[in-house]
Amino acid sequence: MDGTANALTGRGLALSFGGIEVLKGLDVEFRAGEITGLIGPNGAGKTSLFNCLTGAYRPQKGAITYLGHALDGLSPAARAGKGIVRSFQHVALSPDLSVLENVMIGVARNYHAGWLHAFLPTRRGTDEMAAMRAAAEGALSELGLAGLEHKLPSELPPGMLRLVEIARAIVGQPAVLLLDEPAAGLNNSETRDLMRTLRKLATSDLVMVVVEHDMDLVMSICDRIYVLNFGAIVACGSPQEVRANQEVVRIYLGDDDD
Amino acid sequence: MSKSSASIETMPGSASGNHARGWLAASGADYLLAAVLFALPFLIGGSWTFALGICFANSIGVLAVSVLVRYGGEVSIGHSFFAAVGAYAVAILDTRYGLSLVASLPLALVLGTVCGVAFAWPSRKLSGIYLAVSTMALALAVPELINNADWLTGGYEGLYVSQSVIPGVEASLQRYYAGLLALIAVVYGLRRLRHSRQGLTLLLAKQHPAAADAFGTRQVWARIAVMGISGGIGGVCGAILAFAGSTVSPSSFTFWTSIFLLVGSVVSFYGLSLTRALVGGAFLTLVPQFLSASGAWIPVLYGLALLGMILIGHYLPRIRSFLFASKGGA
Ligand SMILES: Nc1ncnc2c1ncn2[C@@H]1O[C@H](COP(=O)(O)OP(=O)(O)OP(=O)(O)O)[C@@H](O)[C@H]1O
Ligand SMILES: [Mg+2]
Image (cartoon, rainbow over all chains, first blue to last red):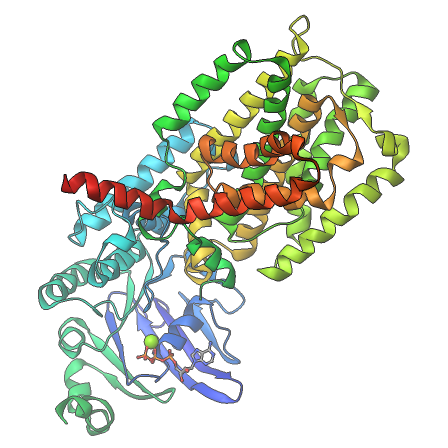
């Protein structure tokens, strides 16, 4: 299949805030069936690029397409309806909801029972909630969180909240999965488990993009990597190519060695 | 990203941390209280039965305000508007068409909801103090609107509500039980909402609008939904107020009515359980009755009672943990 058709692409994306250029007309192509890494120093514009892809930010220039269709006019909610889903760098769970309920929100977009079913004990409403609950329980156990369903977010350590955040993103069978620093706050064994889970998720029609500072994770699970610096793509290629790129070593990987 | 008004949430004894679970937990207290209230008219005098009927109506009004706080993170000082809509729906259907609460209560619910939605749309971008002040505009308009439409509303004189729901049953009992059943129905509906898909998404939208957006819940939808629910409950409050009080007049729906509904909501710490709603409703209805012998001192005593309630609520978690700690140590 043609790579560009089965992909999420951004062409000439430019975004600025009050004269500060955050994205400087960059081109990206995230292909289905691959895990794409997006790396770069703090403030490079990685989260901003995610925000453009999900519709939270409107780039001043450029076009975003998914499966060949333009997304530019669509609201974030409409893009979510197309299966474009993300996790947040700063965990964004509701403190009023249990872990399970927070994850259930990740499938809510696939259900449509009306208001009557919200207030009255109807069959349809009850069935829907049961289905949402089952899906959420599945996602939680996939991430090793079984048994924590009824905890409140305030009762869990940051690493686990991060995993709940990821569970919410993967639960609804997304078509595009944008993960913003999924391993931040995880310990080594949690990170290894997460890598295995992500690899397992990477089916032939899922577009997965991972923003991550953990180089081991990026280098070992990604098929392709984009390197972002000051809002521009400075390198793109396989993990080996990126690792060998002098520019990348200087601006980014080099930091670790110093 | 969280809204400025989210600070409401961290008010004393409310949803912060460990208390998040308690804010509408179905407690044994609710069931016990409901049982007692069902038996009460046979144990107390007629004037108390009447006062409790009004108290139930006010409790529903308190819930209307609390649901806006809980699910929308917003404060209203204009809910007398929705109550007036519900009350006049009941009174007008009663006097003009001879229809009882059976027909007019659903209409009050629908009209309140429609008004909530109609208000939410133009104000959808407002939040915090700006939204609160714009709800105030609603409250201020009510008495004037009623007086100007006196051909329909009876103006200053008001209207009588006299149709009975179940002919033959003593009127005072009808007023009491209609209020009680409506209150229980609202509490039940809100408990269902908390565990529904819409309820979950609204709670996320309140705290993290961007996250809710990313999972398919538009902020505008969330605002309109919450205002619709709140307005609908406000309409039910007015309907029961009209029926339980058997009369409606503009003086029942002033700006102060709105303020007191908010006060009741604060005193109940925005709780959506039967017990909490009744604490708020009782504060509105019964405290002034208790104080009515105190003449000029009423406002002062009322203020002290208010302060006392809020302080008790504030220190309750600490008092509770102190008691538990000393028990555990023994
Ligand atoms: N809403 C906004 N308003 C103003 N400036 C913004 C906004 N969002 C992002 N920026 C700016 O855009 C730049 C890129 O930020 P972004 O969060 O995309 O970086 P990042 O690559 O995700 O960094 P990190 O690794 O620290 O998460 C930063 O300088 C940031 O201050
Ligand atoms: Mg970032």
